[in-house]
Length: 358
Image 1 (cartoon, rainbow, N blue to C red):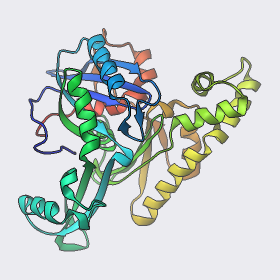
Image 2 (cartoon, helix red, strand yellow; image 1 turned 180 degrees about the horizontal axis):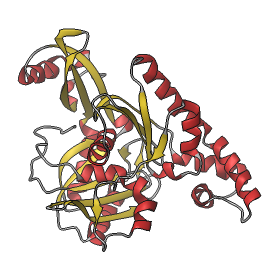
Image 3 (cartoon, rainbow, N blue to C red; image 1 turned 90 degrees about the horizontal axis):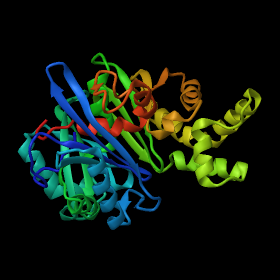
Image 4 (tube, rainbow, N blue to C red; image 1 turned 180 degrees about the vertical axis):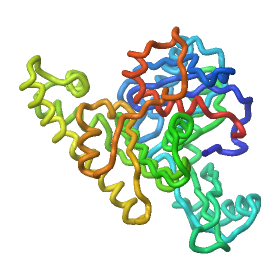
């Protein structure tokens, strides 16, 4: 998990705030004697252009939208865990000589430029997680480094504070997927799963083994690219193409079938990039056998996309269920709503599961 240590402080009861480029979501999860319960969940559209390439381009608009979402949700928690992804954050696995955690922190601070693409570590927030002994050299250990430029982090934290809330943890979208997966899915120590979150403008990929991340990649192709392709192909406005992307087009089966064929072609750039990422992982980690792919995000609801990628990669694929082991209060949503919004709620649920110090 990625905490920017020492940057924030706060208690354990947090609300998850997922700030996407087309929608923001807020979730609250409670621990009860009967298990974890989703006690609040709300979402609100975000105007295009407010978030651009993972950075806050229009802070006043984002602040106002967060304020309205928090009010609409009825959430009483002010302490927030949120996340970043894409070019805003660097995630890299590095091998170090076996040393203790404090020595490692000092080493990264003094020599971080050797391992991360930053000339001055004073301009970034960073954290790390020791993954364990390197399997090929017992005298060394594998470490996951995470770093982000301070100005990008500060852009998010300032708008959250301006909305009257307190940012406590800054996570990473890919790791929020991992948190959700650990909570909801059963797996063995050597089970490998690919978690793919297809957002509007960004796709996050996290390969986990035994519940721990071993490979991550983000790329700036998402559901909007498919919508734009549909709009161009059919000569319709973006908003109409967005609706058709999920609901399909045509009232009879031949028309729907024809539309689905076109949709798969529209999604080819995205699917090809996912396929290349998984193939790269297979080449780099040749001994690892992928058990399944779990899709999330709004793009996971595009008809046929999971089946197409399952066929391309010869791997079992399914749409994720973030409520598989998390109950939801009846006043929050019904089962039909949970099935419909589940893929979009995945990152937010992962964030809401976080607690300071875990």
